[in-house]
Structure formats: C-alpha cells, structure tokens
Length: 630
Image (cartoon, one colour):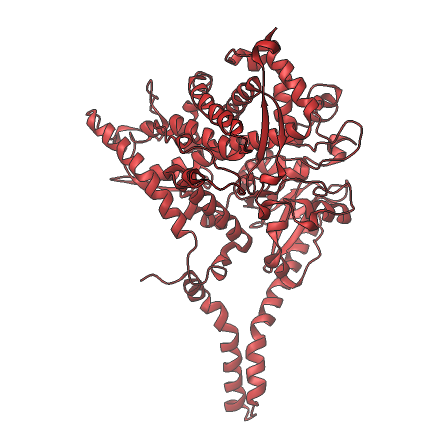
C-alpha cells in the first residue's frame, strides 16, 4: 500500500528536520563528556525545539544577504517586498474563494510604487511582475533564461503529465513501446502545428453543426420559461467541437441537455450531470481546482492533503473517459494495416505529414501506442480547446448583457456583413472589425456605462490564466516601474507574471483603462497605447510559446457569437437563477467605487482557466430574422 502524501513528504524531509536537533543533542553530549558541564534537560529540550527555526532563520537571512550582494554587483536592487507575516505563512490562510483574481496585488503595487515585487512564500522569495518589459523578457527577449521549472512540472505532472503546457526544453520524457526520448516543448509544437493551419481552422462545418445543436437547446429551454446556464451550454459546445477536432470522435455532451436553475424541481434536472461527458468535465474541473490549490503550497502541498491524494479520484474518472477513445484510435490504426512507426523510421517527432481527414489523435498513434503519452497530449489540448473558448464566450455574453449598446452595434455589423441567417465565412471575420474589437475588449477591460454612472467592474482577461510562472535559470535584471535602478532576479527564483493586472493599468491604457469600450481597438487609442507597446496586451501569451490555437479560438468564438446574435436580439442576467453559494460575497460590496468587485454580479474563479462559479444564468429574446433582414 503506497504511503499517504503527507507521510511520504515527511519521509523526504526527515534529514532536514532532524539534523538541527541532532546537532544540538550531540553538542550536549560533548559538553557533558568533555567539559564536565551538565546541561539541564529543559534547556536541551528547548534548544532542540528552537534549533530548526534558528537554522531556518540563518539560512534565509544569509540567502537574502547574498542576493543583495549580487544585486549590488550588478548595479541593481532587490524588488520591493510585499508586507506579510513571518515567512509568508499568511498566504496559506488567504480565503481564495472570496478573492477576486489579482485585485489585492493592484493595491500592493500602488503602495510599493512598483509593479514588480518580491513575495515571501513559505520562507522562499518569489518575484511577481505586471511590468510589460519584464513580461516581454520572460516570454521573448530573455526566453532561454527561463523555464517552467521542476516545481511547476512536479505540480502539473499528475494533471497534465508530459504535455506541452508543462514541458521544458530538456524534459518531458516520452515512453513509447521500445524507446524513451526526452521531448522539449518545441517538439510538441511541431507535432500540433499542422492542425492549426488556416485550411483546418477555417473549415466551419464543424462549428456550424455543434452551434446549431447548442442554440436549438438554448431556444428550447428559454421557451419553457426558464433561465439557461450559458456557461454550461457553451462548454458543451466547445467540448463537442474540440473532441471532434482533436479526437476524431464527437463525445456528444450536448445530447445530455442543459441543466435547470437550482430553484426548479424536475425529473430532468439531474440528467445532464449524469451524462458521461458531464462526469468527465466535472472531474477535470475538480482536478484543475485541486492542482491550483496545490500551487499555493508549492512542493509542500502534501501537508494539505496529508492522508489522501485528492487528485487521484477525479483523475481516475478522466482516465476512464479517455481510455476507450484512445483504445479505439489505436485499434483503428492497426486495423488499417499501418503499423505504429518505430524510432528508426523517423528522425524526429513531428516530421510526419498529416494525412487528409486525420485527427490529432490519429496522427499521434503513428508514433506511440502508449496511453499515458496519448492521454497527456489530449488533456493538454482539451484544456486549451474547451475551457479557454468557453470562458471567452461566457464572459463576452456577460458583458453584452450588461452593455446592451455594444450588443446592438455588434448585431448591426453582423447583419451588414453576414445577414440575418447566412453562415459566416473566413472572409467575413476578416472584415468584421467591431466583432474582433468586442472579443479583444472583453479580455482586458471593465464595463462602465457611457454616462459614467454605475460602474460595472467586469474586466476579464487572459482566459487561459490570470497568472503564469517561469523559473529563472540565471541571474536576470528586470526593469523598474519608476525608472529607478534595475531589479535583480537571482537564479532559481520563481517568477510569476500577471497579465490580468497589467491589462488594468491606467498608465499603460490611458485614464479610461477601466472602461469596457471596444472602440479603443479601433480609434486613436490603439495607435497611442497598444501599437507602440504590443506586450501590454497578452491574452494568449507571447514569444516562442505563444498559444498555437489563438486563431482557432477566435474563429470558434466568432462563429458561435454570430450565430447566437442572429438568433437572439437581447440578453439579460437572471440573478435569481444563480445558486446562493455562487453569488458575490458581501465583502465585495464596498464603498470603493474604483475597486474591481464592488458592483460584480457574478463570482469569477480560476484554476488553469477562468470561469464563473455557479454558472452564468441568462434569458434571451429571440430575434425576428425576417423583419430585421429587411
């Protein structure tokens, strides 16, 4: 029987834990035997207890001293420290359930006068930055000086295995039937890039099939007189689309139907939750949440899950869902008489040409029939293909519900370029500037009514993650926010960067930075702020590891949004349909009208991606296509 996580963790830490008191006890014996001085038992016990904290204090202080010396040698300083408890232990007890992503850091940055700061966490220093030049260094100009790091890989491996999200340049072992290779992230990119060429992401038959199905269910639910959970519906749409695109198999999650509001009692209410795809999606989301919580503890996460590995159950459900799909793909390949290629038949992973009609999974089984490797790749791309686009659409509809004048203008553009019923094309999207601006504007800004009243703090960006992290492989100098001395980052330091905070900075986006205004991507503000400094807007990351699927996501979201707004003329929130636990906590209702949460109507949360806790419950009015098409 395997050891519990906590026992296993303590076993690895025993030398570090026991060495200080053991040295104290040895000193006691030497003192008594050689010097004849009797040390009282109480003093020995006290010294043994305090020896660990004392050694830790010395080590931490010496490390900080060395860092300051190295910084001075480079003509730099250490980034200002965020005030906190001893060793940053207070971070372990923060109520992240009520914490709006990155909002506390905004206040801290204002107090420190710096958007690059040192955060002490479990006696280790971490660097947090929302400075575009520093994020640019991490992602692009100093790309080779950073990697995901062993701690990040260790945290992500149980969830995403050796897939592209956790891969580094020299790691990510690939175990095939007869050999083991180490695949850097570049190989993952080479392998998947062919599936995101224009010809593939512009084939809208797949989008149209699933969008038609999803919108029909939405219409049916609304006609029953009930609110619909838009987030759930669009997550099923993206799940079916991505499974067809990636697996070559439609998991048909939309067949389960849409859920009913919490305050509705019906025999059909439990049907969607029981569908296999729903069970998979729930388990995968739970696994992502657990992994996100683990990241707060870093390598010390077993202390939180001392007796039971909380990730084991949801990941077992995920494997049970995916394994039959993988087995079917391997069997299909063998049935065609095409043996899986061995190492000596290819020089490097990813050099094989994708065949007509192949899915990504069909392509992968030409290199390995190892289910772990196949599952890892599919989980990484499923998280990207399902959750990110669903989040983008969910928060876009949330904003359109709160800002009807934008919805009206967007529908006018849709009718002008596409029409009331015609299917949109690739060329349509190229010409529809306002649609693109709405999707862009949704990610980095807040909604505020044009008259300046009732500010609605609804700015969601970086749907992939509001934070990301790299580890410095060598000493690096960052730029300060106030044109002061450069900031020194020691080698081995974990560097987190927050795009959600960067996207809200008035000094980067202008005095109206907190307003949702798609026009900022079309008028003179585009050339004043974004054009000269493109790294202030990173919804899909940047540099060599920029998201391969960003155009696919834009096309999928654009297609669905066009079809949706051809069908419905208005959208509004149904707050009564929200579960009680999913409503914004009372602590968000502050008197600070400039805060991020004061007027929030939903409760955003994040794990690997951002989502609305409890769903986005809406009502929509069907459009009269004939009348509007005249």
